[in-house]
Length: 213
Image (cartoon, rainbow, N blue to C red):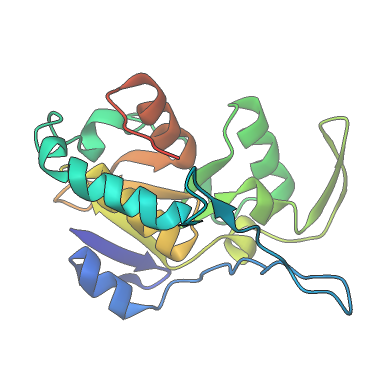
């Protein structure tokens, strides 16, 4: 179960599939590769031992189809509660961007949920959000625009409950290109936070993990 929170409170609540249809969350789009003028991007066609066309994507898909039944018994599904930061760092929407950046640096974090004066979740701010308004040299802010965290944060923000499958959380982070997902209790209190780093640490330290290329 996911929800969307903004400056006016809860704006949506529902399943992952409904959230993808909702589409009212800021999303940063990637940049497609650009070929030099007059050239085309070429892809190398590989051949196998008998000189037949070799399609890596088709081979990978076939491999995973064959492994699908075995994968059903890999182990327990992990939930947000098992990998989330249980004492999440928070930023205030009304603090300056320079102050927020220093807090992230002091706590070795790349992103954090943002709360308002009533301690209600209103957004998420990452280093890349903050760096749109400050210049940093030797880990010190040298120049800063007069902006607050509330002006540069990602909002509305997608939140999830503690029992949400982390694979669904990862899917939402990829789908909306967001840096983290706050974890809320059923009483709408902030109880945790999951960042991209938390997901990568889970993959690295909790095998089995099947990869094929």
